[in-house]
Image (cartoon, rainbow, N blue to C red; front, side):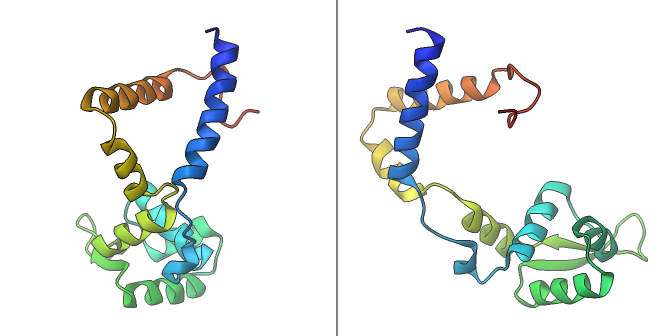
Length: 149
């Protein structure tokens, strides 16, 4: 099979996999605004930040960011902690509960549906599937960015 045909076939299969295993959950199911979810995601990507740093990144006033973070701390998805390098600074960071909420709110596929389907495959088939996807993702892009088209 040539690469062009394989690419078209993969696109069709990917669409079918998405439809079959898609998790129909919205971030609002976790009572998170889009902005709250964006803050959690940024913290997960960037690491602990001060309220000022978070406000600057989100292009919000420090007062508005402080209020939003206070609500997220109250809901126990964020926690305040002292900066080890500078005890005068207070950082915000995801709690274990916050990491779980973020993972569930942003998960695209249903782990349960995938597990049921993968359980019907042999161990070797599951291993080959995962290794093939890993190799596909490790292949350098033909263009500079994954979102070029």
